[in-house]
Amino acid sequence: MSEDVHLKSSVGVIGAGIQGVCISLCLIKKGFKVTLIDRDDPGKDSASYGNAGHFSSYASVPINRPDILADIPSMLLSSTGPLSLKWNYVPKMIPWFLKFIKNCSRKNMMHTAKYMHQILDLSLLAYDELFEDIDVSGLVESKGIMYFWTNENLKSRELENNIRNELGVKQQLLTPHEIHDLEPHIKKIYHGGVLYPNARHTRNPGKILLKLFDLFIKKGGCFEKQNVQTISFSSDNKPVVKTDLKFYTFEKTVIACGAFSKKLTDQVNEKIPLDTERGYHVHFKGHDYLLSRPVIFLNRGFGITPMEQGLRVVGTVEFGGLNNPPSKKRILNLVNNAKYLFPELKEYQDEWLGFRPSLPDFLPVIGPSKNHKNLFYSFGHHHLGWTLGAISGKIVAGIIAKENTNLDLSPYNSSRFS
Ligand SMILES: Cc1cc2nc3c(=O)[nH]c(=O)nc-3n(C[C@H](O)[C@H](O)[C@H](O)COP(=O)(O)OP(=O)(O)OC[C@H]3O[C@@H](n4cnc5c(N)ncnc54)[C@H](O)[C@@H]3O)c2cc1C
Picture 1 (cartoon, helix red, strand yellow):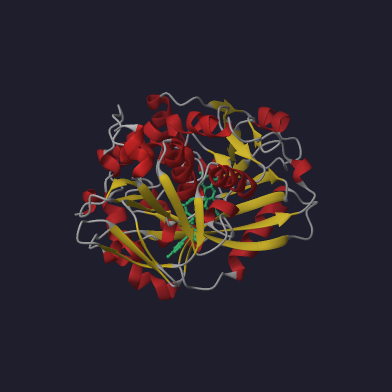
Picture 2: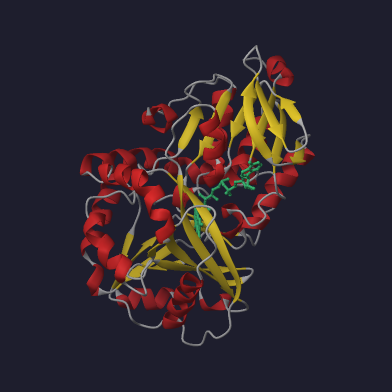
């Protein structure tokens, strides 16, 4: 496609989380006229603001794996563990759970691992390209990400390590002594660990998102703070986006509303089984000096990242939909777990609940709509949507610009659910 045609094409992007902002920026760099729409200020309170800030390029082993099914009952019963349910939502989630169980075979796990690896492997390079134009000094650190565990939790580690070795992911197994050398402030409760040396983290995801957004505006992008109600199509197949206040007709439209995307995809007759894994964070202000890099304590399934806001303690997979109130118990679970590792922690601040957009096969939906040639999707990046922001932006912009790619994009297509 020539530059001239791009200049004439208008694209509406719905959702200004990390997906929507990266897509908008990549499109505007290619000469498209882009309008980004969000019901809120960019990144405010969304998953893209409150996440753990990991750029987890190594994390290709999915949650849908054969050994998880046996672990679920004990995880649900544990008061220190990561998993919880809002019982009023369980009936609504049964179809999702059934699809999830189907995807826990070794074959399906390896399919997800292969195609997550395909995009995770390119994720850091894609961010480097976007970071060329903004100042991220002091905001992105390359010190790796460390996991550790006790002897109770060794079985599933072997499976992960073997798959990562197969995929060529760089990992360094750690002795307790090495863990202590890397992070001397953590209480010595661990028996082993692993460092992913190529992983990075940000000290403030919200700030990076805003810098990318500001660059988009500087390059001529338009932002509309409006709530999108419906998507329909004109007689010549152009998407018509109706907000609370206005109608917009674009040549092309991208839905990038994270866990909230299903409301819009249902309207265009796609049966995409998107749901949410709710997660929480709290901050211990002024204590970020206790860690040099993000750490994850696998037995209790939570992580801590040193951030500008202090130590950000992040975790929980709570199945409870988009409308249930936050659970105080989950917040206390995080607080107690953090104090277990760092007994000097006292008061915490900023209780936050966020929505991971998750599909039962743990692959995102990236690409064109099954039913409408001018409608595109980028959502469902579950625990890895922050890591995959820039690469998804690059892929979606490439598809809309009709560029050739060496990547096999078919596994991310929404038609896999038909
Ligand atoms: C606790 C937690 C920790 C995490 N940690 C990490 C991590 O360390 N690394 C990692 O890679 N990933 C992490 N994730 C996952 C990651 O945060 C998400 O996958 C990612 O942020 C999703 O980005 P998104 O742009 O798709 O959605 P969101 O960030 O949710 O943005 C969606 C946007 O769409 C807007 N919107 C929704 N509906 C409408 C509508 N009808 N009209 C207008 N606007 C609308 C919303 O206002 C929002 O701004 C974590 C998630 C959680 C919850």
